[in-house]
Amino acid sequence: MNELLLSDTSIEDLFICQYMPGLSKEAICLYLLLKMDGSGKFSLKDVEDRSLFPKTETEEAMAELISSGLMSRNKTEKFVFVDIKKEEINSYCAGVIARGGAELSDLELSPLKKERDDLCSGISKTVYAGKMGYVFYRLVDRCLFNYEFETIVIYKLFLEAKERKFQYDYRAVEKLAEEWNKQGIRTADKVDEVLNRRQNVEQIKKLVGRITRKRLNEYDIERIEKWAQLDISPDLIEYAFRVNEYRDISSKNVDETLTGWVYAGIKTVDEASKYETELHKENSKKYKGQKKSGSYRGKDGSEAGITYVGKTEDVKEEKKKASDDIFDLFGGEDDEDD
Image 1 (tube, helix red, strand yellow):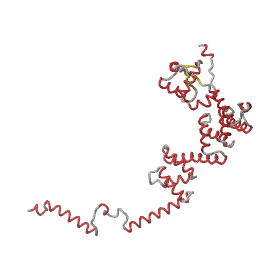
Image 2 (cartoon, rainbow, N blue to C red):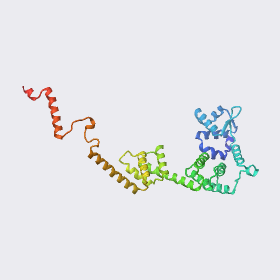
Image 3 (cartoon, one colour):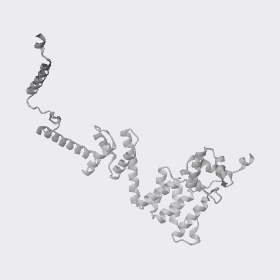
Image 4 (tube, rainbow, N blue to C red):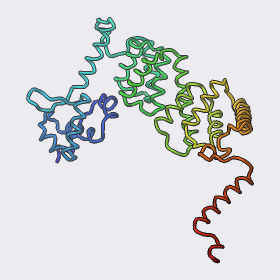
């Protein structure tokens, strides 16, 4: 009892910053319980005995810890903790050496350049309240030396992570940096363009959700991203929904309308209103022309196989004669009198 009350369990900051945000609650609980044990080596039975969860969930949590690089198996088939500090330092030093820095001064964990130092200090104060985890310093290095991002791009990368509330999830921030690198977002102008577009996407999502009153699916979001990329204003999108009120209101129908407007060079609601008015007049003329020429389908029943034509009185007479013939087959009123 005294041992439990007076003992402490040390957890690395790397675990909190780099690994914990991406783990399930079961995996986190299991990791902490095994850390508290202190032995450092566990059989499968040891793991199951220490777990709070059923066997199946325990096995899944253990597999999660292994796949994330927090635990492994040694030669005796025992589960052991991975030294994540050692792994991180080895990775850092390998990155420095790959860049051509082999001097001992280059392998220190302190910032390599004043530019990097100032950048990391700004990110730490703004995004992490002055407590940025070391793992993010390494990501800054990669952005500077591998991806060749401008410093303002790296700063906005971390601000974007904070805005989207995953700044403490190292893997999520790393993934965002990789995406920007693949898209060639390395300069201030390019990053501003991308961030403005994302802001437009979020604004349009709220607009479409309010109009349709439904949860947006992947196809809706794909079309919305397309509209943002085409720089279509929210006002014009809202008007496109009003234009399609007579149809089944959907992003698909609205996309067809907006695509037509884009090809026509329309950028404002006034231009779209004039365009729709002219389009309506043109369609009305076509309808009247078809009706006048007789090409309008539905004018009479000839398309359905009805062959009689002529005046209305002639048609009525034909129908009456046909009815009389039917009655004659069964005998008329005169026959009943006889």
